[in-house]
Amino acid sequence: MSDLHLWWYVTRASALVAWVTLTVAVLWGVLLSTRIPQTVANPAWLQDLHRWLGGTALIMTGLHMFSLVLDSWSRFSLTDVLVPLSAGYRPWPVALGVVAFYLLLAVYGSSLLRARMSPRWWKRLHYGSYAAVVLVTFHAGWSGTDAGAWGYRLVALILVVSTMVAVLTRVLTGGGRPPASRRTPRRPRSAPQPMTVGATHLLASGIVGIDLTARDGGELPVWTPGSHVTVHLPHGLQRRYSLCGDPADRTRYRIAVHRAPHSRGGSSWLHASARPGTVLYVGPPENHFPLEPAHDYLFLAGGIGITPIKAMIESLPAHRRWRLIYLGRSRATMAFCEELEQRWPQNVSIHAHDETGSRLDLAPILAAATAGAVYCCGPAAMTDEVVARVSPARLHIERFTAAPGQSPGPRRPIDVTCSRSNRHVHVSESQSVLEALEHARVPVMASCREGVCGACETRVLAGEVEHLDAVPHTPGKDRLGVMYPCISRAHSPTLVLDL
Image (cartoon, rainbow, N blue to C red; front, side, top):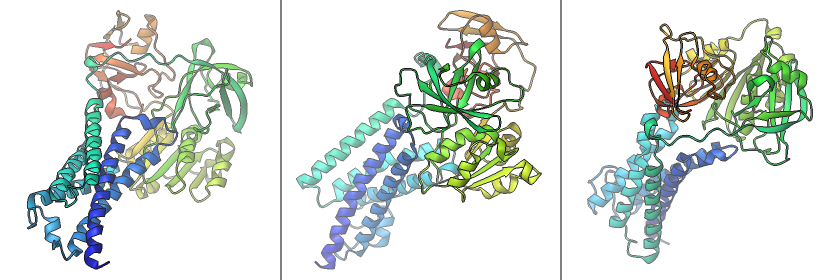
């Protein structure tokens, strides 16, 4: 086969492959936006596949342009394939392909720089992928030499229809949520289900691991790394514990309970009374600390904060870059310490205070971690330092206790209307919204009562909330229309809640 034919076939084949992979990448992106893949135990590879499809489309497009320049019969110059309307052959159709290439380059580049971009600009750039598919479609139809072949027309029809369906799906499902006033009432949270303590394990001094199984022996709901469950204890106590087992094991949940020195009855009761056969009521898994896809990770864990971090580490693909800094008073009090060191000696750094005699300086560690995602779970002193040194776009935090920030002014009374129960509740200056609701016998699930765990999340239908909580994703609370009444209040004199 002559060089003339070789490059001609390369041009045609690479163009078709680029078109197909670009369309599939868009379809995959729409699937990811629907949140359906969050039911998968480790969704990071789904994002990797989406990025790989986009990169393949970009590489095939570059090969298509490169082969056009090398093809002596087509006689395209480098300027013709890079500058719109400069080509002598069908300048407008060719220009559409050039513009589509630059759009695809911008979209893929935004994926690589996502951690350094605001979500709004990243989302706007990503909408360019839809425009790129449309431009490629017209470019192929008006400038391609195979447009008259029935096989080409069949492939084109499938790709165009698929793209239209993807765009319609994206438009109908929407990238954001409608205003609270136009939302349908949310479904009530699933009631806690009776579960049996299957086994207990001493994980470290003062820390007990508890395995929970379904009473009927059936499968448990799916959970993802970073999830927690709310355990309902006697005397009305509710406590949230991170899941630290294997997400693929649907037969049991494993939690680790640290006996707090000043326990209010939660951890001390579990340490004293949780035995194989004990029945506990447990809520479904919730995740306010999800593991987001990233090229590399820095995990920071303090004490019992290792529990969600451990599940995240175990869910990562083998080739993913990560590092764990694990701090504690002593190795005897640090759960999973030896296991983590033995499994990943190159990735795990243990810093026990009784060995070093001093507190670890996180400043140089955080200064060196200039890229990738930072996940931190630990006591307030640790999380406050990390918050002060890491960009919010890269930082994911889960706290033990509420952040020290309080309302900038004196607390004012609030009048709360509960829309579903048609109740009107007055909240005095000395009460929290949650306390007033409970006093009025309006049921609200609650756990930490410090604005940390997110168990009391409540839908806001009207009013301006003053967010004082430490639950992650703070910038999105108003958009989502939620508040945490255990600690948050209102800037407006009235609130309407979906209760």
